[in-house]
Image 1 (cartoon, one colour):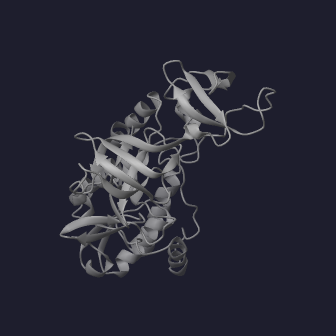
Image 2 (tube, one colour):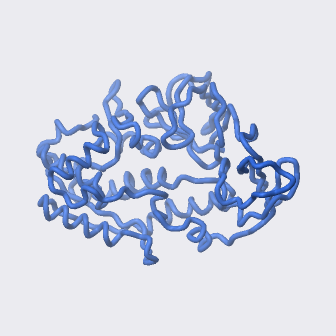
Image 3 (cartoon, one colour):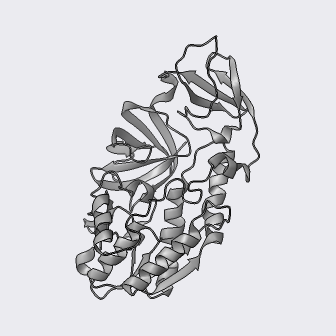
Length: 364
């Protein structure tokens, strides 16, 4: 069944506590609902280059738990993270694709390794500061969009198993962000104005190219226009994604007009980056294919013949109407009503029926 704050009094709940304002307010709400709360702070990435805020986050978590009288546990998942998330991330970049490791972090770490550890602490239920909701629909646990459309994280949660959602509470699911900060301020929490973390989970604010170059050797090559002219030099195909405009360093060419240049393709076999100017038709596509589909519970009925659903090809995109059809054991064909811009292989397409997140797949 799906759990909410009205039915967790005296239940043993293990909360993932990051040290940020969202999970801090989740802790407050769980305590006020009468749950027996323990906090678990995870270290998933260790780096001493000045960009990693792990030490500061742990200190904030400690202060909060002292203030709320909650036991705090600290666990190091860096090995599991490297094995299950980071290696995949590097493999995808080596293949010229654009991965989204946050999806794997949720499936493998926050609702995988964390869930197993929480059970050892006696946890009946998990809780996190994600913006999402669950509900019981026709006897199944469903994942729903959060009340705050600007913060909804169902896109990143689509690959988590139904049985994990069945024992998870999302205390922030009915709140919008400014309410969360207000609760933190009203309860006197020191993190009430702490800046939200941004960027890829383990990279954060650090320079992306510099970070990636430590793991994958850069392989510079030519930048060609769609009509075959060499117009510049790229630093390595892994640093670019379809639709990218920044960082191309093409400009002021006498043989071109002043319209901006965009990445429209990658030619891996010849190590060429292909670019075009302006609103290029090369960036538009009304269909995509996928691999590695994952559904929350059973796949929706009717996939063999085709289903009309909503879909997102990137986080925070409005749902796009599409037709989804199963083409193989784990592959899908998706046709959109409206052409989509810059569909990036390696990213995820996530499917919705109204507010219900059904699952998703890797764009191939």
